[in-house]
Image (cartoon, rainbow, N blue to C red; front, side, top):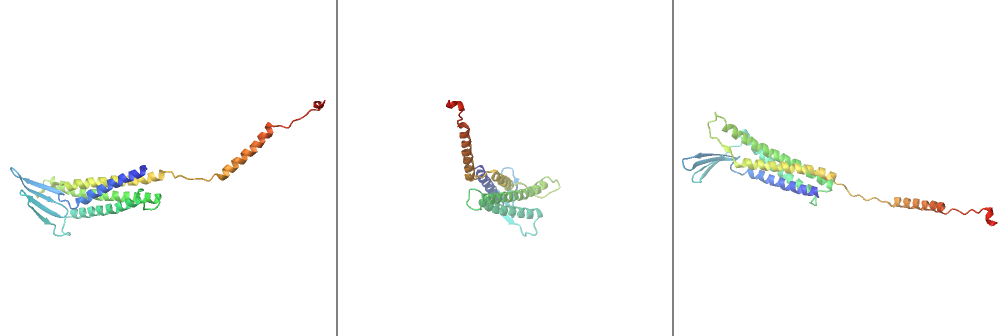
Length: 231
């Protein structure tokens, strides 16, 4: 029962993390920068893995997609690959988890389902690590440029998508670890067995029967008469 509850908790945590990781791909604010005037913010610059945009004080946004994938910076290409890999691994891990959980009717025996659940946990951990690496690589580029005194171009700060990605990656890793530990709980669960004790019962009853005869002979000795008894 405890193993089933832990698998359900792990599934909910992992799925929540996978949804958060998936939501970071279309999110706009991977990095953001603002230009403030004397009264209001005059412009907001923001970018993600697919485009860069600027929003003026009236709320009008002008966006420009990245012209060519081959002409992109290396860290953007790496982040794209890592985040897409994280989403794909999380999808397959969710399917494995559904087959490996005890509360489902598919997946085979309990031993087989435990192995599938452990595999789902490993894939969830890999998904979380890919997302964590992609977000950290993007954040490292932003902070390096921000604190570089020789960098004269527009400087950005960390956007909301990075924090969402880190949170989702952490949930995927936590859920995957719980799935991996569930296989040890399944191995510790004892199996109820039934043994046939018919032969043992017959032998014990036969032993008791012979013991009863011995006791009868001992407790009821034959009477011995002396010759003086007839006198």
